[in-house]
Length: 219
Image 1: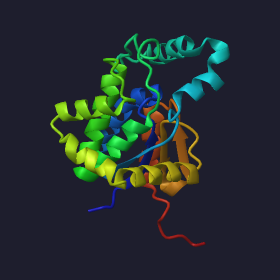
Image 2: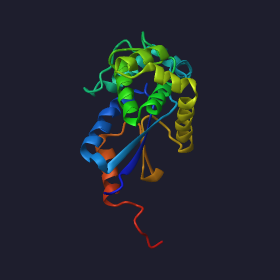
Image 3: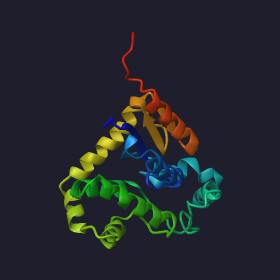
Image 4: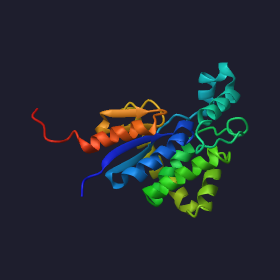
């Protein structure tokens, strides 16, 4: 059996472009199956939401303008619904609590459980306007999905989830990841980030699957 091509996928759970990209990730998995392995990492884009709004959006209308931007970004994507209450009424102060909890789920259960919870949290925020910046809300939602909040809290309390999250954040900096979402392929030789269309992502991966760059070389 051939070794799958690794795609390192960096995102922030509060990023609308990552919410839109979720369907592209689903389609990649459906089309390429065991030919690829998507390894998920989290990055700090919305670690301090208030500061981001103050520095990037305050002169353009603050939270209201940012909320309009998010709605417009997703308007042409039927499978990425946006609740009108996010960023106007429901304003998470950080994505770090969600990222921390997702690393805790991965440690307490496994990677797939963390992937499932990440999608659930994104859905609860963008579609239902739940404040996933709050740890109590996150633990309630994960509990409702059948995971033990006690086990998750244990990984947070003992520091192992935080250590895992810091490894993700450090990896993003070391690999010079510029935005969410980012797809790192070919051992870091190619980085696609932002609102990249499915065909572009798929064609880049398909080319590497057909012509891997680690083949024997004359040089």
